[in-house]
Image 1 (cartoon, rainbow, N blue to C red):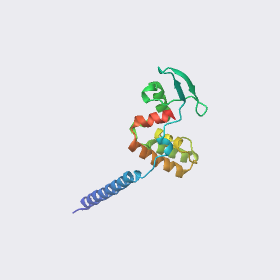
Image 2: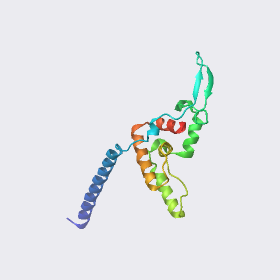
Image 3: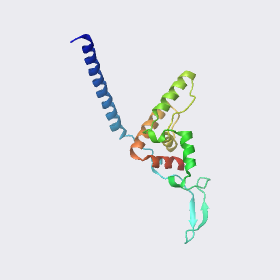
Image 4: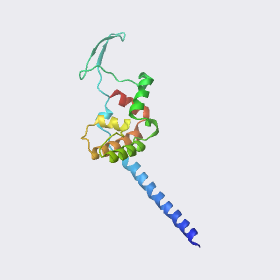
Length: 169
């Protein structure tokens, strides 16, 4: 066996080993996410106003809750241009990631390191939904918890349900 064939064989073996280790980490991560709890506030509907209706269903009065009028909307009730604007501003790749936008995270890390301070965020809509459902101090630990919870939420809820919950909060 010549040197090139030996090198190619070693490289192939190394690639297989790296692939096996990567698959083990991914599998362990997927299993580990099943133990990440969702914030209790996320499982409750958002605070809504109380509407008083007559016997024909005509609104008579709406009582405010928490100093505002509100009711939960379905995604179909939200105008498409509002959804498009929120996605454009908050999470352009919402329908293409699984809870964490790795491209945005890398971009934010690189620009943050090059400027010596945080210059842009990388939170997805799913991460923001987790954040507003359970307040934590702004620390790296909190960000990691929010990220793991966002990954778990994406396993349990469809994208439309996540987006509707975000818009309602």
